[in-house]
Length: 96
Image (cartoon, rainbow, N blue to C red; front, side, top):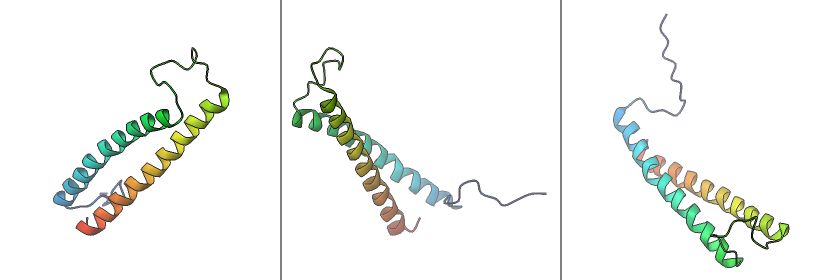
């Protein structure tokens, strides 16, 4: 017995729509990665942390390290939400 079950609920049946969805993700994922990398350098400059020096040999306190990674985690969540929001609005606009 054959089933029409699609393993991805949001997967479009049309190949053109599937290609457009791939193109949107293909553009948004490098932008997300680049903005995460930029955020590391921005946070490092704001907190006066030398990013080229290993954490073990630096004289950073535990609180400063926790603040850096906490701020970085918060920025990752914000950027991920923004990226998914842009993807959703793009899919709605193209009716994918």
